[in-house]
Length: 199
Image (tube, rainbow, N blue to C red; front, side, top):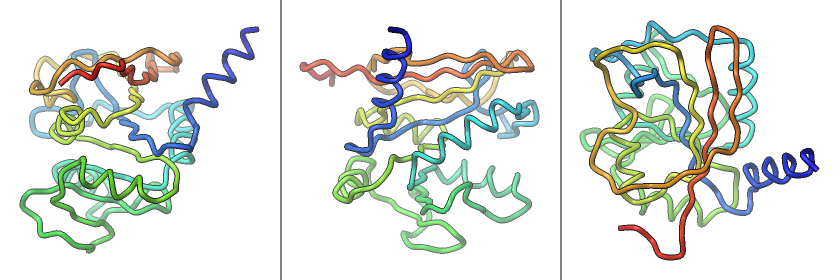
C-alpha cells in the first residue's frame, strides 16, 4: 500500500504532461539564501544532496535565475558561467539588454509572458534557481509549482531572504522530506491551487 502511494506521488512530481516551474534553493533556518553581501560560505554539499540535485536536474531542460544570482554563480565558478546540465539558461534582468551571450540568454519579459512561450513547446520542467526577487515575481503571478528546499542548520541573523515580502498567500503541501548527513534536510512541496484562485 505504502509503495503504491509513494510511486503515485513520484509519478505526479515528474509528470512531463505540463512543464512545471520548480524552485531549487539552499536555505538557512531563518529562510536566507545568502549573507547580506551575497556570500554562501556556510553551505556544504553532502553526498546525498549531490545525488538528489543530479536527479532533480535530470527532470529539467530549462534553467532560470535572476541577474544577481548569475553574478554569484559566476563568482563561485571562477569567473565564468557553466550550466549544471545541457540546457538553456535564461536570466531575468531589467538592466541587461535581451539576447544570448556568455552562455546565458538575458530576457526582460514578465515571468508570465516568458512562461507562456516556454509551455507552448513540449519539454521537461523548468528549474528556478532564484534569487529572492525573481522568486517573488513568479509567486506574484502564481507560477511556481514545486519547491525543493535544502535546509542547513544555521541561523544567519541577517541575510538575503528566499521569499521577500510582496506576494499573496500561496498554499503548498509536503510531498517528501529527507534527512541527510551534517544535520541537513531536504523538503519537497507542491503548490495547492483551489478552483477559486487567490489574487
